[in-house]
Amino acid sequence: MSRHLLDIAQLERRTLDYLLDRGEYWLDPAHAEVGRTRLIGRGVALLFYENSTRTRCSFELAARRLGADVLNLDIEHSAVEKGESIVDTGTTLAAMGISHFVIRHGSEGVPAELASALPSGSSVLNAGEAHVAHPTQALLDALTLRRSFGQLEGLRIAIIGDIRHSRVAASAISIFRRLGVGEIRLAGPRPLLPDNTPEGTQMSDRRDEALAEVDVVMALRIQRERMARTTTPDPEDYREHWGLEEADLARLAPEARLMHPGPVNRGVEISDELADGPRSLIREQVRNGVAMRMAVLEWLDEENRNGQ
Ligand code: ASP
Image (spheres, rainbow, N blue to C red):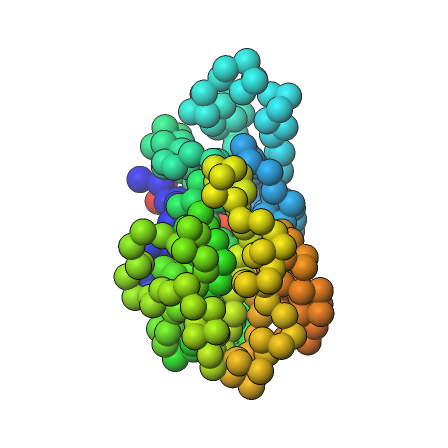
């Protein structure tokens, strides 16, 4: 049996805590040297069937900082374009000695399908699956909040915007519930909210109510690529009703912080002043992402080596 990271829900609380501690460990520059020896001789393949800047670069840096051989598959110029299936691509790379497969895909179930086809001892790391899951984003968000607030227990968090199409929101809700967040409020324009309120959350289309006294606001990108043209909100209209601006700070808790998974549509989901201001955690999220992905790669590598 191989270990994979397909979804946050698969991780026990103690594993979450362990991974967050290891993320913290890899953030410390004093550990950079020891890091370079961890995955020597191991192969990590990056299979991004959807665009990415942060997640892809972050995984690549994480793998390199652990000393792994990194293979960045150029999907557009690969045999995928000749009709090769993902399973065949994966097993071909496994035959070359790749052990870890970082995959992003627009269709639900593809990371699990790959996981079930790979030889024992290989791991799949879900780097974004349709609107369904983005587990390493959830981990890096949790690490960012833990570093900022000391713990997540009791925090009031509002997630604002396109909840319906957001794998970030889905995985965030899952990890926040497990880590004891006090309140998870979801808010956005009606067409961008899911049909049913996710368990453990409160959901509304009343923005000011959702923002009242929260410790954290996570703004989301409007995910046009998952919407029919007719339901895509007009950016100006969205900014006016849902964009976060300086004036909103007064509604939040006094020390409230702002997050966004990126890429940010500046001036639509969040104003420049807020995105670059002292309350913003956006850069820290990106920085913590590399350390968090080091922790996940290291953990899966150890689990799968021990399990073999
Ligand atoms: N980068 C995140 C994701 O891949 C968020 C986004 O694209 O809006 O889901």
